[in-house]
Image (cartoon, rainbow, N blue to C red; front, side):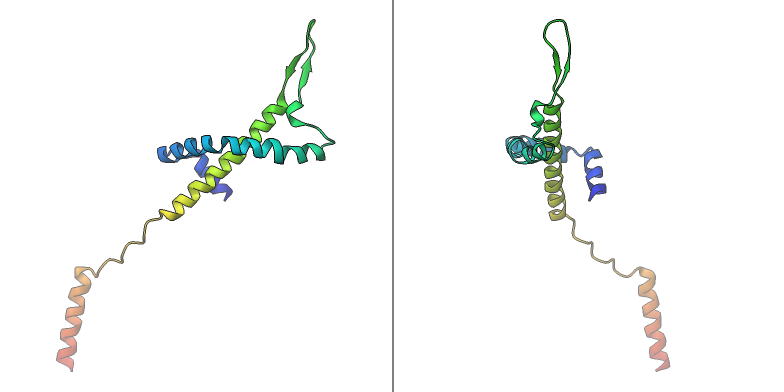
Length: 127
């Protein structure tokens, strides 16, 4: 499944991209709520009550410190991974549904037909 996900992420298929953009936009509020309210609070709890959205590095300046808010980036990264995985599963489902039916086995070649006719004639003569 990991290899299929890599192939999906690296593939340049326009239809997959269009579906991904549409589904991603539709999933954005759902994933945002899921990450902000369900996934990140337990992770923060396990990490001694840290709220990821408040994580930041303060760079001191003569006036107010400048904040590098990497916690918001971590939330966005988790949201992206969940959205990408959901889209991957959707595309995988669509590809399974759209699998082409196996082709009918080819008929006998002319050589095989002639050999069968020769065999049948030889059997008539012998029998």
